[in-house]
Amino acid sequence: MPVNDRVADPVTDDSDASSPAASAAARLRRLIGSHRPFVAVLAVATALRVVVMLGYPPAMFFNDSYNYMTDAVTRSPDVVRSSGYPLFLYLLLPFHNLNVVTGLQALMGLAIGAGIYAVLRRRGLPWWGATIPALPVLFDVFELQVEHMVASDTLFCALVTGVLILLCWWDRPPLLAAMVAGVAIGYAATVRDVGEILLVVVVIGVLLRRMGWRRIVATTVAGLVPIAGYMVWFHAHYGQYALNESSGTYLYSRVQSFAECSKMNPPADLRVLCDSAPLSERPNSQEYLWANYDGNGQLTPLAKLTGTDNSYRFTPQIESLTMKFAERAILAQPLDYARVVAKDTLTTFGWTRENVNNSIGNVTGSGSLFRFEPTVAAVPGWVTADATNSRAAKDYGGANYGRPSVVQPWARFLWAYQGVVYLRGPFLFLFVLAGAVGVALGVRRKTRIPGTGWGGLALLPWLIGVALIVLPPMTAGFSYRYVLSAVPAVCLAAGLAFAGRGNLITWLREHGMLGKSTPS
Image 1 (tube, rainbow, N blue to C red):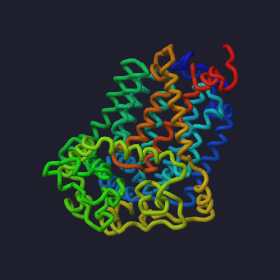
Image 2 (cartoon, helix red, strand yellow):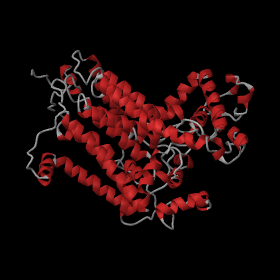
Image 3 (cartoon, one colour):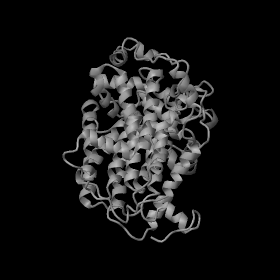
Image 4 (cartoon, helix red, strand yellow):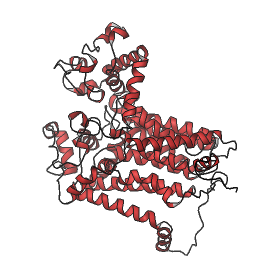
């Protein structure tokens, strides 16, 4: 497998020169001609997305979908989840058409796959080597499904992948590219809660890349701008500078899968949050936050404290109590915390998906709401019965609130497709492992090229991908839906492991595992 030595010969900041007289059409033809095999792959991926839009028009939903639309119409930040995605929806409100939303998200999915391919080709991989890491994003049925859902996942994934493309395209990105990357990762922090830590990860990555202090400062400051702006907006509504009021409650839900007050010895003000139910009878960590009853039909501590209307579980007072309780549980039972986090993280890499046929699956991203089914769920009563929620859903989806139709023969094709074409957990693990080996080889490389630094180009996407896999089990609980956001970064890191000086192919040859090494 021939691999160009892009680390030995750093990528310059100048694009290939083209004749000023060349027409846009001629340049496009040359581009297509140079990448004809991948263009064919992209065409098939595009056709699949058309099938999805024809089979389940106009969009698919889960409970958060209706909250997003309400937040967009009311133009107010949500206390449970940051409202970066509703801001995106608000820009599309004038169309009053969910097909526009899902169509744009489908284009984002295609752009993510094309971006991975483009970076890896620029870094020297042959067309097939650059195509393989793009395949999961382009063809995984669950990627297709989440693109067709009113959900923040695709926008978040596009932002994070866009940042990685910008920072991996050049060894030392132009100052403007570094600033754009900073703004994008800062905005991602307002789209998904798990994105709040990613600016720190990016800054660590560019520091280790030795990209130069001006680029590092530009990325950091630009990243803080959208976060600070959002916090000011949140303060205007709720009187505090924050991105949400749910971090403590989510972490409390996480620790209740192992917390035992007999081991924690909490003070009196926190004992109200102790759960006397055995661990085996408590709701799943993802479900615990919303559940009112345990396995014995008894009210959970949160339900006793706030009532069965779970909207009261996200106030500054409850946030403070639950955060203190969660922190105390982790400090008192660190090994139990590590055990549940490790168990949930390892679930990511299983061959089959768990909880496909039960209600828990709809909070862990594997249930009927996250699959193409013969029938679709009814619009929840809390949407139709509430004037604000109802108006928002109708503003986007029309008189039937946007409830999707099941249209044949397209839907039948998707039923068959979803049983076969998706990224199995062990293959995701291989991508993670390949990226890790690439980073390790970058660490041991003696020659440091400015802009690639310690760990090489694979380091930043690998850190981002691993963070997106591990952080949800650490802070809330496992969901297959959350794992999808990590796939592009992990795949890009794996591809970069095969590019540049001292890459994985070279290492395998040097150790006699892939034929003999040839002198350069």
